[in-house]
Length: 549
Image (tube, rainbow, N blue to C red; front, side, top):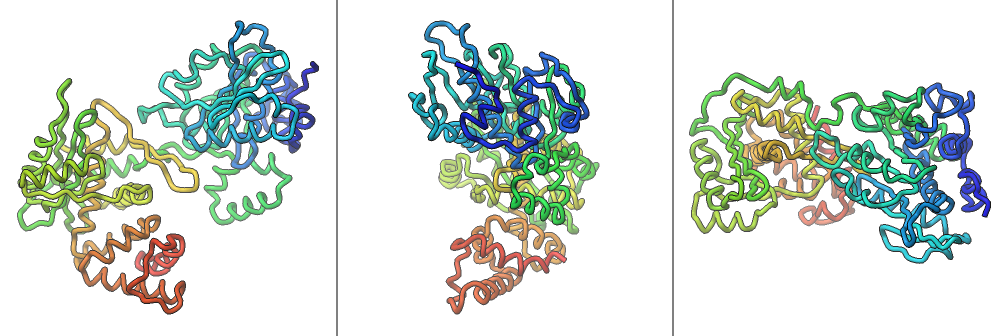
């Protein structure tokens, strides 16, 4: 059987057209061709023969929609079909493995690889398939398997497998090492020893923060390959065949130059942009000390209840002169072999609220909420637990609200509670498919940023509990409301439940605007924002935006 080149395999065997940019990228990275001088810009100015060691690791920094995921999937498929497997033991299966930061991306890659076989002679060779893998019986009788694997610490899911090729797709969006979770280096380190001769490990991603394996390779070896061949492939160079995509890119360039530069031009986000909270803003919030809590003040408490693996934490905060001040922090840690007792945690929380003259309604998340609520009621401790909205949009809004308040200098934290700020500094964010961010909460030194989570809820409780007629609170509240637009149903609940003239007026205006613009002659009292969140969001933006000015 004649072995085609990878470019020939794409064009002739699976009938996938390649753009000129994709073809030169594939030929130089997968077919062993020298880098021609006219393609040197793609490889950071490098041209000529590529060192053999560098061909084992292919690192692509690519623009969005450049075709990187498809090319990586097709390369793994190519290697499964044509790699020399004479060294395999009898009955051994060779693998082509894909690692992605989330399930959706992994499934997308396997759909690309399996889908391209449809209607070709290779489709008859597929003998087994499911959502995470498919197995092919080659003409030489050897079984090979395309598989997507979950990223695991120390790369354990990649161990024990003989690999013809592997890919880490969107590797810039694996958890950063500082998050204490699985990262790209963990996965990569387990692969080279299992790679068969002639194969490559492909690292491909759009850029994010200036950290991680791909950034390190880009910094060290772009234009000077030694252990990796690094390429930078902006979307417009890879996809000149798609006028609709080019029009979208041109529009984004005018509308959002920074996002355009990252998404399509392969420019890294500035150092620190992956932090959920600006570290300088956190540092500026420190104060030597604050006055003790007083009975006449309105103080709210947020809590993060952990029992076995994580501590429990409670934070008390007040609004004073337009600034939110942290008045007290309580952290309860389990001892080795002795998890926290729920009764003890609730009893300590009640004492904490009492000594801080705080509102006895403690804002908490959904973790162990129901047993904790029942236990608090049964023990008649004088506190009630108020569950927050745990939806993705509400969670993201809490983080954004708190970050905005720190950036505006509207939070003060006494030095004796500086550990709270240290926890906030550990939290990272990553873009989420479809927009928004995922927040990565690390485990460090026996904590899971529990006090930081409690602060998020204390600030939210303060906002919900204060009277909006208070002028100092009006300066903050509108910005916080607007931040919740991704979860309009939640805002509707708040507008309905808060018995304040400010919110009543706002609710009436929202109803009127929504009714007049989107619902001809409905009963305004019956308008339900959850019917169409996108329409509701548009209506609320129109009303709330002027309040921000």
